[in-house]
Image 1 (cartoon, rainbow, N blue to C red):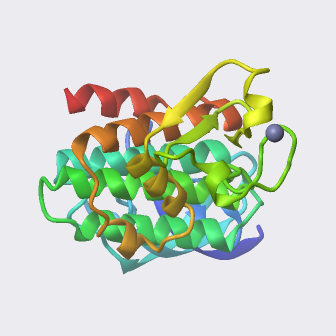
Image 2: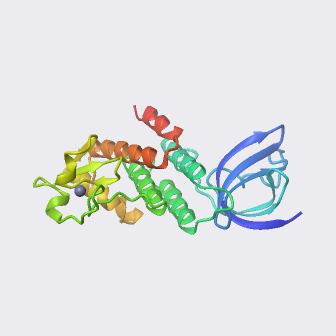
Image 3: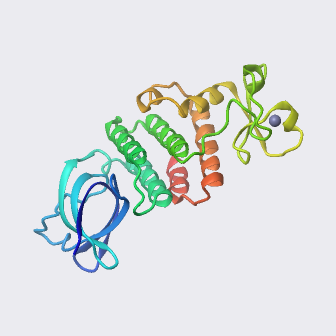
Length: 260
Ligand SMILES: [Zn+2]
């Protein structure tokens, strides 16, 4: 049986039969891996505590017929504050679900691996019940994965005619941005008359939206965003994501529920 090694992050796990555990991992070398850890639920399993959600592990795998088999797992890093915090766990689940639904097996991406790692690290580091910061981290993650996958909205040229826009054309006099989710960005004055569904994004939101696609995570968490704008940005980015990536993210609905 062929074996291989993979540096991985545990994103999902469930029980198979009495004692086996199925894990879904995102690995640096192979993208998504689905594997079974035999006997993981045994009292004295060698995997004890190692294949927990959001752990970073070095694992050794053997190729199986359907699922690969985890033969060894060593912990590299544990984000111990995630599973014990309701909201941190909820945001991490959304992040994990997005990775599992947008990435595939045998299709590695170092950028996605790094993004996932810094996102979970920042979630873990966040103060307990600091939901405002956690929402910024989620915004950062959604914007970044869109960027890596090639779906950055167009902010400096018109998304319909492609014309490069001057600063004054991108935002009107009040600094608001005219945006289309369907066309994926700003729409120039000339093209605005021809389409529906345009959104007016107010100055503060517009500035934050643009910066989400370029700032580092530590700068995003330092941004000053009101609750109202945060709600608008999350809803906008979720809609943009769902429209362009076209997959249903169940955790978005869940997050909305626990918010209320
Ligand atoms: Zn145009």
